[in-house]
Image 1 (cartoon, rainbow, N blue to C red):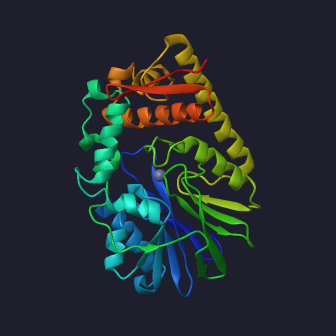
Image 2: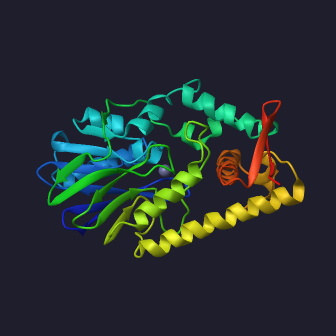
Length: 327
Ligand SMILES: [Zn+2]
């Protein structure tokens, strides 16, 4: 299930069961010291696949580092397990902190997600954090993390991989860039065929979509021969893909403005209901609750970006945010 797609760089497809992402592209770079980039979920199946591949490639876990691009559980699920095998685990400080604050239902991260749902007007949906996929699949323990700052270098085989900060999809997403060879391990920053989920994370991050769009520009400015992304097929023409992603969000922003123009002051939930969604559901009531969390977060990120652009304003009434057009 793995293949060498570049000298000493192996792509291992790790299946993500019952998940629309389908699989994680896990990268294994084999050298005297080896590097694994992201892990898959904390499931027996994923564990067997990853460990089986390392064994097959004769890679010694004790001479291996794991780099986690961001906090999502399909990327970090097996980190604690690999650490027990002797792997050194690296991750950025921002996502590392959130990961450490996500272990239990009453941990700070999930308390914040619940507060945001109230702010978004989702109270009538009676959402349960147990249905939040991020909670359901969260890693149950977090290993000791070696914190990577921008500029940190991994010298593995013939590659010099530099850590670069590309927040947007998560508050602290990091990618690995080989400048000389023009390679970028992008995590979920740029994906083909699916649009990376951009959500609202609260005011510590603020305008997450604006940050994401600026970091698309950063990647557009890099000289790249190949992007190694975390899901689906690899982008062949990254500039073209970046344009598509920007157009997608421009369309979404316009759609949100049109809804506010038509309906007047609206909660995030009301705007979410008015947006077009690619999911097989008749209406909002028919949305699985796991998808309601994501959809509202995405709508909120777009409204927050419009606010940053000076096109809409928000006010809080009884703990619920209302967005309206700025005249
Ligand atoms: Zn992700």
